[in-house]
Length: 148
Image (cartoon, rainbow, N blue to C red; front, side, top):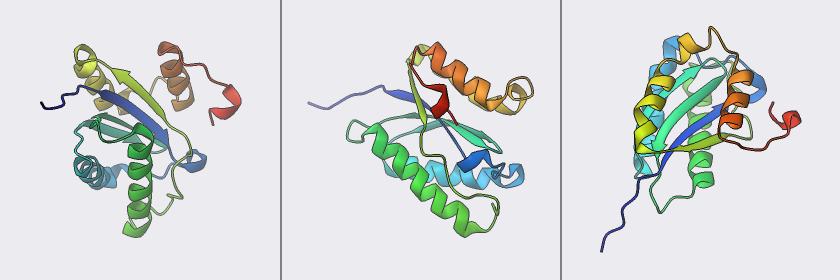
């Protein structure tokens, strides 16, 4: 018998010290690189978008992959690539933590649209406020001193 899954994660993490290091004119190359990392893990990347200081991904998660290892691999591999490429000179690394929020199939299209519209969205809401709102909406307890 085969294993079946439907595990979607909306993943959010920022650049170290919230440096505006993700250049808009080079972000497509980052997205392609991230797609490759996710694909190698037998996962699927549904949507990715970024702002200069953070990134959002909607992925599924293969049952053989733990969430923490998945995010660690994404962050380590992309960090090395971002630094080596020379196209992101302000990039010093990713923050230590991350947000990972599950969603169902019924929510997938809404989350895709939300991620796709990040640039418009952040004209109205700062990243700190967005991140805090996502935690509250998911009823995740947190200590504000560890947010940033």
